[in-house]
Image (tube, rainbow, N blue to C red):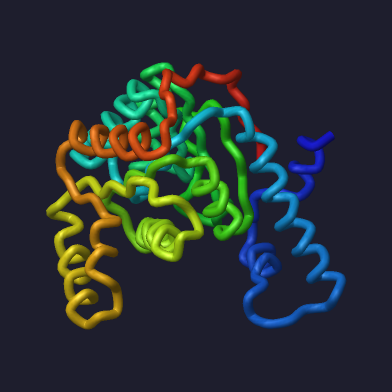
Length: 254
């Protein structure tokens, strides 16, 4: 019954006009339309909660959808997915191509849980083939809540505006103590060098506190990244890790 409702409420847009109907931030609409929007949002949360309730501890990996298979960042993300599974975590991403596909691929091939929270877009975002659990979302903000809610750590790899949005969402929630101070690891020191300089400039301008920079862990070493996650999860929160078993494959059709 819930799957039938999901197919009704979540469908892939096929025209610009249909996408326009999903825009809701331009101002008030009729009360009926606002109620329908509220129902869709509520359903997105309920559906995500239902599908991920029993998946075990996860780490979310953020990164570009445009990274190609032959690029070093892609290969590193595959290794990240493998090592997170070996550490005892399932891997969750936005479910698309590029870095997301690579991290899911590493987890899938290592025999761990591989999860994708796919956003429905008219371009660029198609679910990758390395998913045990895949959930479609119409709204970015619902998807971001789900990506954060079930994660004990966050790995950020080179990406664009969406990746930066997700990174600073996590940092803001930690900074304001809305979530625990879970590890946030950025892999790719050269790529993130200017970001690091910008953070230091923010400290100089007193728009952030010096200790806020400590919320970011920059590294090029996947081994160091895994050790940082392990120390900050096991020691701080007493979580006992074991390899997360692969669930039955659940692929929700759009």
